[in-house]
Image 1 (cartoon, one colour):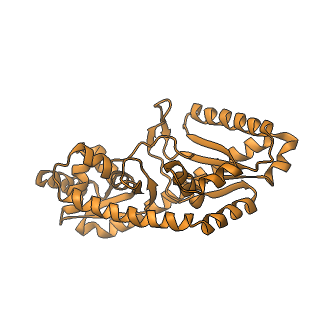
Image 2 (cartoon, helix red, strand yellow):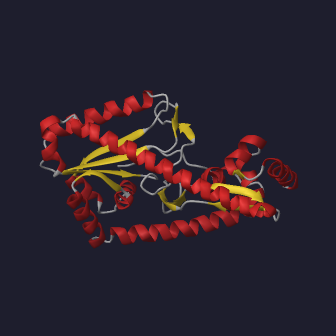
Length: 303
């Protein structure tokens, strides 16, 4: 650890404050060892920006952990400097906050354009649909925590521009299957067009009926829990505000919101435990790192 600390200190003196990922890329040090050294050093200060929020993970007992993971939080959302550089650390952290907000806003604008195009393709049927459907976006975009770090797209392995667009379309049960198929076709085409662009963006979308959403309020399975979490956090992009408000009121009445808050509490406890264990363990087993530290490459789970 002393040798790693020495290299980090020398880098910061020469180059000034840095993000965790800039240290990682420049020094080539294992991300866990780098994080642990920075957190335990008396000569180094760190400042993370953004927020932590609930993530449901099948690998964790009880499913609840916080996102970003410790690794992602350090690499993408943490500014590192020396004690004598605290003013520079604060300034870089403020700049990073603004950058994250702008990335999130850009992703939100893109999601709105996607939905507008898909709806426009329905032609004369679009007006009637808007009162019987709602289009929402979940994930880290509505939470203001989107990032632009390149990462592999799940189906192709090609690098995409950071956070994906998690789109959920809720259709009233009275909407015809023909309209649903047209909407699905439009979104599928847009999804592949976004992946073919020079700056590749990943669109994940799911279309489901009102009756299916109400079934998921039972909160009985992992899939139900993920679906409810997304709807609790999501922002409306288009369609019926009343439909979404009615759904969220039912979530409250059926104690779904209270259950999600309890999962958040447990996730916070799990993060505290994880950090304590990892800081006390110089060479953790790979299995422990996978459960507590490493960024999870989640499957497409918006259910």
